[in-house]
Length: 406
Ligand code: PLP
Image (cartoon, rainbow, N blue to C red; front, side, top):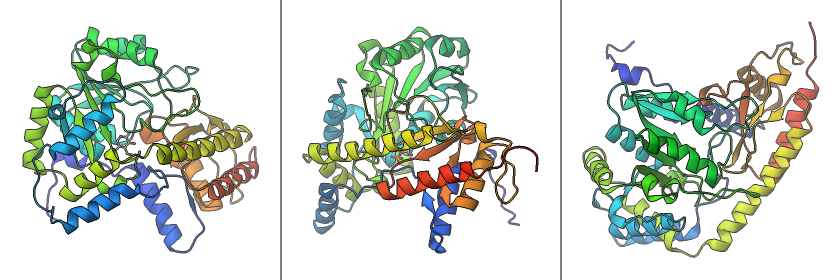
């Protein structure tokens, strides 16, 4: 036992459940077990080619030194253009480039929260939000959807949860983990709660590209000038361009916030990687419309396959309408009380995930850390043949469960 005493704020932080399950699945795969990993938080596509080419060129040219703290000017401009496709009016000077959306969120919370401040958030929500908020001294105040509301919350529910400590409304549409996409009208009504109660909005729009069916992506800061002046938009190249490992994201918002975040970043990271910034610039400025649309359609196909297969499994129900991102939540509470072939009884979604992995070699993430305790999160990004095999294994696993006392 080391004599080193950790600070309280860090001792509380647990590794993310997604990362833990992903690591467990990868360890089994490395040991030669035929595990199908449906825990992943990234599309299974290669990084877009212009990003890689730009990075190679950056290295060859010796572009390997510190950059300005807020990012290289051409990338800030490219991000502003990228965001403004959705109707916002960002200037390059109001964009700060960060090491992924995660660091952008960390900077945003650190810049905004005083100890004890509350962050209002529709549940279910992404696992890292509570930890990011608490590291900055705040706490998450989840607002839970009504049972038959399709995993969406209403403005009245949000308004009822506002206290005198509420400082931020955190929105994330398309949502991780549910894949739910709020419509423009729904988002406008939720954002209005922030206007009425003088809250800052942080809108995590990292999955803006991954929207399917009739759903449409809406950027919150594009809703109205009243909303834009109190909104910080978070995003990244991570998911859209399959660049999760490159670590480039951004926060865009009013000039005062951009300046504060730049100062924060100058002392904590200096700046994101110079090479990765060039790669992100390469991705954002190349003409990738056809390729990205191809990828979007491929994921939509996998999404439909997954929804259809799960609908046929008695005891499992898809939560809400997963029209975006690349995840969905499956309510597995219908399997509670049933027993596996090895005699274990399922009493929770965590049991379901653990026993499914142990017996059928399919890894999914239990929903407790997403505030979805009866659900498991399924990431449907794996190639179609593996996805089909995984869904067959899930169906067989559930069909093989015994009902009633042993
Ligand atoms: N926000 C959401 C909703 C996410 O799902 C993720 C990654 O899983 C992130 C932010 C972090 O993204 P990045 O890899 O760019 O830090």
